[in-house]
Amino acid sequence: MMKKYFSVMLIGFVLSLMISGCAAKKQAPLFPLMRLSVSDYPEFGDDMAYDGLRHGISQSISYLKQVPADKKFQFGEDMFDAAHMIRSLEHFLDVTDKRPSARELKKFIASNYLVYKSVGAGEEGNVLFTGYYEPLLHGSLYKNNEYKFPVYARPDDLMTIELSSFSPEFKGKKITGRLADQTFVPYYERKEIEEQGVLENKAEVIAWVRDRISLFFLQIQGSGKISLDNGKIINVHYNSQNGQPYRSIGKLLIEKGKIPKEEMSMQRLREYLREHPEEAEPILNHNASYVFFSLEEEGPFGALNVTLTPGRSIAVDRRVFPLSGLAFIETQKPLTDGSGKISRWINFPRFVLSQDTGGAIRGPGRADIFWGNGAYAEIAAGYMQHRGNLYLLILKPEITSS
Image (cartoon, rainbow, N blue to C red; front, side, top):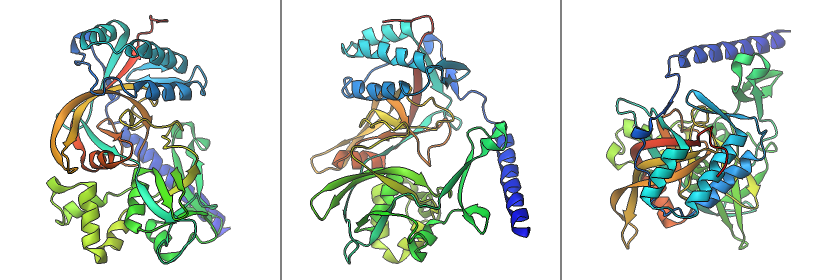
């Protein structure tokens, strides 16, 4: 009886925390996306000359055709259904396939589209853009002295509870954990998984990789490729997560004075961890979050289970931004020289699609650009921490056809 009583008390405690959290969030801006007047529309353009845009839009349309036509998507204080989202994307594609001039594009959007701007974060009200990419690791299907770090599939005992089952006010809320002696408890942290072997006989190992640090960054990126010692290359994609909070090791090293804030990047983090191997374990374990993967024929896939488009797909907070939606960004990208070093950063405008989410991407002031794979993608993803603006576009309701 005591175990059952404790289980009920635990669930009650969790629900009380959720209630407190909901109360706190009510103080946030009611509509994080603001509809603009035409006079406030940005100067639209596309630094990629629309390359890749058709693929990105087609992937969003593919997703939207799989959901109910009346599924609602929120743009600030306005709502649009999936059928309208599809019309909006198809209408935009009809024109951009013709590669319009800047003047033609501006006139087209002003006449046909509503534009919403993210309120961003901080006093400036802008958005912090970071990047992610698809890393390549080296591994094997079998554990040996060279390949000894496991890439785990979802564990058998990992459970997710939808809290909406307890009360409608928890719609969209969930907790992740496991059962232990008839009690639902938090799932194992990174340190327990990597140092105590708690997943033995509970999770399939997809592959064994050479480097713990590279595995850590694979989890941060969410998907990647593994070049096996048998000559094959496999795609691994985010499947699930242990429910533990994501903690930035970059922020940790800045706070400890190990790396100056202005020098922080993924590349600088890797460099520090390799130069200080005795510190690597506690630093990596600072992030209790742990990602589990699935094996895929293609990829990488985003949160909509559609293929991401390099330079066109972005990760956002799904509580703020309508996933699959057409967006426009203004921020900066790196230019590299012949040696692969960044020579300078330049402003760029670009149309993108909100097709992914991320553990560290929270609120209206964050967005993550998917850069693809290869040397430039790694550089852009590793160093990008630049402010800018993020807009959402949707076809005006009165326009029903091209």
